[in-house]
Amino acid sequence: MKLQYLLILSFLLLCFYSCSNILTKAYGIKEQKEFNLVKTNKFIKKNNISLKNSFYVKEEYMDYMINKYQEDSILRKQSIQALQVIYFVNDTLVSYHINCNTGVTLLNLKWDRNDDFKTFIPHKQAKTKIDTNFLFSDLKNHLKQTDEKQESIINSQAKVKIVVFWCFLIERQSKRLIKLVKKNLFLNKNEKIEIYFVNNDNLYIQHLTDFEN
Image (cartoon, rainbow, N blue to C red):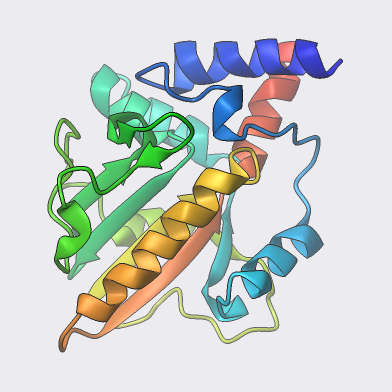
């Protein structure tokens, strides 16, 4: 069953979601059967992130992005990558990093291969296309807090908003990306920022289920 899952998942990631062949079992791909809020919140706490900054993406997000970019295959593929970091300034997208345009080592993605994260806000990722018409005010409608008891920051007035898409599907790579993004925050001088750590496992679970059916 696990082998069957990996074969199906490889097909989805490499032929549909991804734009290169770097997401393999060697990168820590783990079988996910269901989205679990308790597990997600435990991960957030373990990685020293406040629960108020923890979100998950609604299931319709993938279909929304596919339809939004049905005339642009590059933006469509980019928008549904498993790991992403998106920087918005005053609602406008200014820097965008995705897993399939990173560098690569034997076992890990190399997000900072061009020293992009040596400055705040990080430089634009080479080869990654930016749609300046994609606004945070659009994206936020597809996000939901993992703990609704927390203070809502979805309508924060911070000048800089950072959205980090992560998943248990590639947990080890997610941890490394989160660590890098948090480290980069120390380079911020005076800008008011808000950061959103967004789990997107349910997107891949949903579409894998559709594929199996």
